[in-house]
Image (cartoon, rainbow, N blue to C red; front, side, top):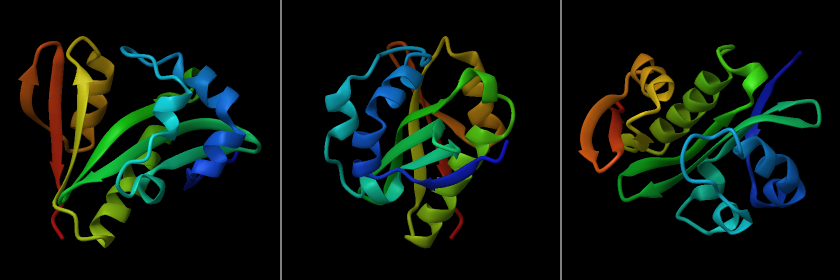
Length: 144
């Protein structure tokens, strides 16, 4: 199955909302509703990506700019495609775009009980930055 990584636009989210909401149910932690996906954030539509297998969304990454950093708000890959490099390709697309824009780092927050996600981000070079309640803040500095 061929999986392509393409920008995730607002129009695409609206068109595929039912599929996105279903895919998002596998996330550990806070569940999102339509409004979460459609909220306007700085550069969100230029920094978000989807993994597509034909007409199906296999995964997505939603990010936005926060000053000189990019923040990952959501990264989801369907259960059947986990551990197949889809998440890595989504994050690498964001890293490449962030470097092109001259950004300093990429940040994210993950539940401290989500060990799989923490290990995934560590393998990609993210480092522990801080702990807050039940969350771990991680960051990846970009060498531009």
